[in-house]
Image 1 (cartoon, helix red, strand yellow):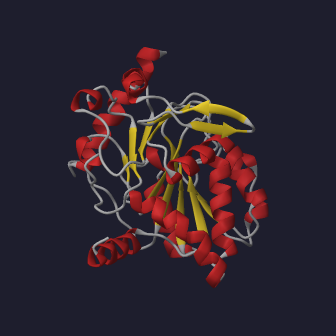
Image 2 (cartoon, one colour; image 1 turned 30 degrees about the vertical axis):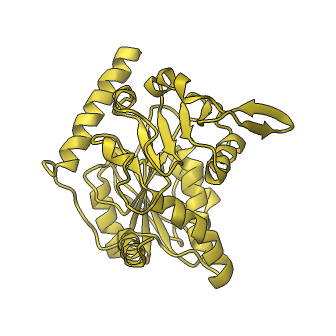
Length: 304
């Protein structure tokens, strides 16, 4: 099983790199695309995430369309589901997970087809929609998207948080209450982490090497790079790297990772702002690449 996973990881890394270098080309579409997928094999709550995101968008009068392959369905035809036709399709037509989504989401649009690029074209041409939700999008790297949402299997993934200031504590408690079990916090001084009345403690950086080797996600909450070159070389190329600092975009910490998938600080800034925006204006805006570029220009102009 370990050899199979290593082979899968190797092929995935090569494929990702070919797309990053534009050796393999991507298809772009004139509509915002949000991709939801999992980093690893096995269930990670992808379908509930798709359902939740669609509900949030529809509550803000944004019309999403789910693009899905329809795994294990008996039909191979392209199925285009608009809001008026959703009750005419069966599990055999669309697959079990898409069928559950149709039942849970009144008013949802969906296109089911193995070729997701063709499905997106059909959705744009036929349906009245504002945004595409690309189900299992990490299997479709040939499609250019505005946002990637990567889901982790919380039962066995190892998460490292560097630093233990206010933002770090919020991130830690967020993981804890979402059910993530293997979360380790490293800090220069020993600090208590109070969980339901019982204290856990941050770990010293002198103990970090063995944790770096098996890490799946590393989040830096310090203003600098707390790791040495030797420690950075211990980290797998499949480990996701994040830094909560949003200016500059490529922090000293992020610059050390040439091949890893990165989550930039602007994501945290935006996620903090969205609930406030909804409270003030009554809807959540679509966050796409154009909006992120505007924010970066504003941040650079303010010299934050």
